[in-house]
Structure formats: structure tokens, C-alpha cells
Length: 106
Image: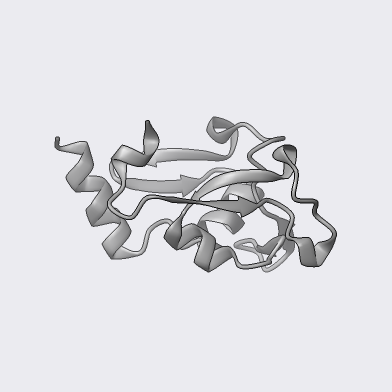
């Protein structure tokens, strides 16, 4: 289970928050790590590297490997959606990179 790969576990998150009309239904819920969930809040998009508004990665509609790639313990966005999501959710804050590096060495 993926939750075994993190020190803080997962939370159930609304992909599209209730604030934006998202239902509390299975197709709008996803597991999110604590830090991603806190950083996302009720946001549905962010700015990409060019400063354009871009929707966030949608785990029910998008394929992870089309928007992100691993560079060692770092997770890099490879599309506008990936870049905006990685930036907003702070995938590569130093503490998160260190946690990934530690779990990769197990």
C-alpha cells in the first residue's frame, strides 16, 4: 500500500472541493498525503511556469506518467498541469525530497 511509503499517512480529499460544487462522492474523492492536501486547500488550479492559470492534476481523469516524472527523489512536472500541480503542492520542498530519498533507499 502506498500509505506505507510515507511517514504521515493519507487523508481523503475532495478533488473538486465542495466550495466549488464538488460532491462528496467516490468519483470526486482521492487519497492525498497530508502535505499535498494542506497545500491544495480548495484550489482547483494554479499558475504554470509562464504565469498562466492552469487546472490541477485530476487523479480520476489524468494519467500520472503523462504529467510527471521522477528525477531521483524529485517529482518534476512535464506538462503545464504537472508544473502547476507540482509547484502548488510543493512536491519538491526539501523535507519531502529527503523523505522520498529515505524511502527509495529502503
